[in-house]
Length: 377
Ligand SMILES: Cc1cc2nc3c(=O)[nH]c(=O)nc-3n(C[C@H](O)[C@H](O)[C@H](O)COP(=O)(O)OP(=O)(O)OC[C@H]3O[C@@H](n4cnc5c(N)ncnc54)[C@H](O)[C@@H]3O)c2cc1C
Ligand code: FES
Image (tube, rainbow, N blue to C red; front, side, top):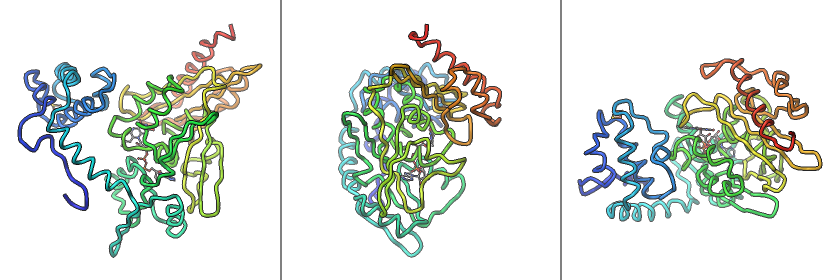
């Protein structure tokens, strides 16, 4: 164990766990490259006992050798069995260590690098003010790629995920407040009962590993035009609370995205929470993710469409992948004519899709949503 972290192997005893031994008679492993990921997905399914099909439990894991028949069958068997006793003991041990670590409130400083893990918002904001060039890191699912792909070597990192205020999940009479460091997995648990239409969208956000680590705040603050949460939150009419030592401000989320690569966040500010309206006025919601692969893929287009009830219903259509930022289709919302998306957006062609395709698919999605509106018949 180094610096408080341990690497847990499948079994210290050398014997196979139930997920591994289930794979053997089914020949579910060939070159073995993908096998650890599949086995861990099966074990995670045993731990969470979620009501999932084997395909959902394995989503995001790819095998280039075996075909998926044996893997799916092995998962079905694993799901019907309890978690192995050896795992229960190891998980309890690891959980104890992680609980100690997750108390936060530490700084690791050496001659050329520094990591801070503040526990309170006050400390976080002080650090942000005093070290404005430090990198904020939440779940590190984007940040990790800057290290491995861009070979960045940041000298100072401030971790947000130990800060209690950023982990808040509170359901109030009119608002659901979600701390910026809440993971996508925990967000699902808070939001799906209010908005069941989001269930499939959650399932298609990365894989379980990414959802358990990646945060809602990170997904917004990265400013990506193809981040999956922004269009959904824009359609729902969400706001952001942004804090600094100078005070707190609340802005509609669509105003956060100024242009490609530029967000409304100053160097001494931190995104602290996301305010999502309760269901009250939202009559219908549809979220459509268009990507080349169903699971574990980046969106070509993400459309989130909401009908808001009132004397005269109004609509919020928000899109990712159609411009340099996630954006409302304001003209189309007014006219309810899908062809007006051509005025709202001038999408790019890239390796995921050409501009004409993005426009065509978006028009069809809006048309389908409006066709499903029985009150307009
Ligand atoms: C395999 C894989 C699959 C993925 N699939 C998807 C997908 O399907 N859909 C999707 O949208 N994304 C996907 N992503 C991208 C990523 O997982 C998400 O964007 C995730 O939500 C980022 O959150 P994080 O906590 O990991 O961010 P981090 O990597 O910790 O940070 C991201 C950025 O946000 C900033 N930041 C973080 N927290 C704050 C804060 N509180 N205040 C201000 N700035 C902050 C950081 O400084 C950094 O610039 C995927 C990534 C991987 C590696
Ligand atoms: S066994 Fe070779 S990639 Fe899956």
